Image 1 (cartoon, chains in turn brown, purple):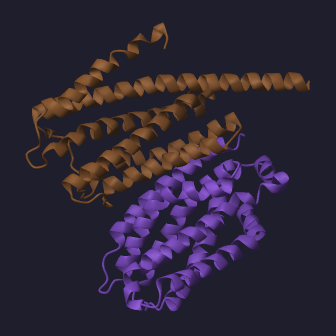
Image 2 (cartoon, helix red, strand yellow; image 1 turned 135 degrees about the horizontal axis):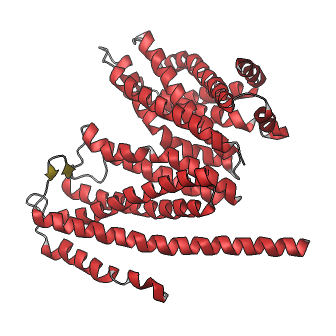
Image 3 (cartoon, helix red, strand yellow; image 1 turned 45 degrees about the vertical axis):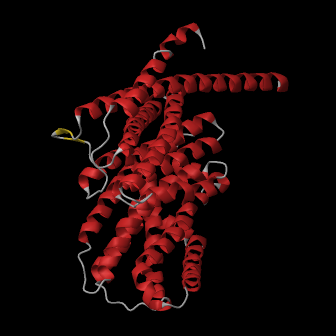
Length: 226
Length: 216
């Protein structure tokens, strides 16, 4: 932790506030009771997923145009964290589904597209793991990321296009919730995005360090061999 | 450029076709043994079985489209040839499509015979489903096989990447097949339109992205 990382500290009170709002301040749902509170984490994580994969897409296109590895690091970090948050969305969704629908899992369009998203980006991470040439890895994963991103808008629209049992919260008519719940939801979303930002900063720093170490190693190797 | 296609077709006639066919027949046998002799219960899952078999055989076949070009740097030769590179891809896709579609055509009657299903469907929609399904696999598959051909452990990676991206093909093709085989017939065109939309997206995107894959 360095002096210039001061901006990380406001996260703590914000997260405490979010937890307070989610668990104590906001009302129970009329039908679902306290299981409603899972939703705040679900929605927050889902927001991060959307943002994270969009960053991956933009950074991948950026890499293909500019060929600068910095773009690739952005794409990779964002995809990694996005995949973790997708897992959070899935797990919280499974728990909530058990409470609300009585089943852990069902092959609903929204659930299916989300699990596809998770698996495809897991494949993306595998592809990165298995290729050793940094340039080639960046190129291939950028191409795959663009293919994989097709699922993101489909996932978002799944509940709107098809008959899904997944609830739609934000519609053209506004937000379908009690005002206090909306406040709790927004604060959770902001807190989760904040967490994502912190995580991104750390991961990018680590990746830069990794790239630097590899470069040094290569230099030494050529010196020793030369 | 059309010459390319024919040339490639002839060049490949040998092994990928044989492997795919042998594989799909094996899958039929395995399903027949694994599911036992209760034919009535099979009706409901039959469309799922055939598309699973096509998916696996397709992955096997599509994986070869670039595997061929790696020894002796044949791909470099192809790339150096004059003309638009997009055509090479288009040719690759076309060849892979022909293999896939041909495999489906030959394997379909085998499936019906060996799994004891009576044919009561309509021909045209069934053929359209086979063609669109094959096209869907090939669009994503050729791009992914190009990716994985150059990666360490790529052969293992291809199915991992391919399976989730092919899920929409499986869903729409299976549902369409179900509708076609159901008695009385149901309307498969809703599913087929979805499949067509997928095909268009996932053949346009690879054509755009291929340009970048040549470089490394």
